[in-house]
Every structure is written in C-alpha cells, then in structure tokens.
Length: 125
Image (cartoon, one colour):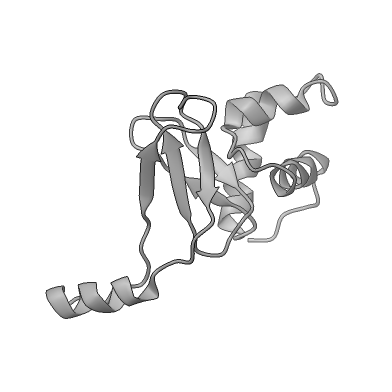
C-alpha cells in the first residue's frame, strides 16, 4: 500500500537510523514529544506499523517484553540483558549453515532463523 509522506514517520525512521538501543513505541513517543507536542501514542504505533509493513524497519519481539524496533535490516543476533532489559546487536556473523543443518534434521525448508542471547550488559555485570 502507498502512503503519503509523513513528518512523524520520517522522524521515527531517522531516530531508529541513529540509535542502537532498540526503543519501544513508548520510548520513541517520549523522544519525539518535545518536537511534536500534539503527537499521540496511537500515531507512533500506526507509523511503526507502516514502516514495518514497508520493510523499512524491523520489529524485535522479546518474550514477555514490549516490542522494540530497529532499522538494521540485515540478519543479525541480539543480546538481551537479564537485569535491565537492554537489547543490543551481537557483532558476529549469522550462521547460515545452521539453516542447512536444521533442514537436514527436520525435512523442512528453513527460510530464516532468529537467535537471542541472554546475559548481563556491561552496566549490569
């Protein structure tokens, strides 16, 4: 679907392009509010949904936690701090061989995989 240009959508994308902390919709709302005092949380959620639909950003789903968002679209892994909940990208290559091994073990076709690591971030350890 084609959408009209949106200043708030552009700002969301720009914020995600310049952060590594994988913010939630509420965190993005709080960051945008000073520049857009009439902004609603619903507008942020709607624009995040549009950006995900367009493939411009990715939704990071963490079990038991609010969804987070990022603009890094190439396959990569995440590390989640078990103490503070911070999410960071893991700077190691994605193991494509894992897909092949899973296919051989299951007779299923693997289209992608997601791996999340858990531990303590630098601030919490």
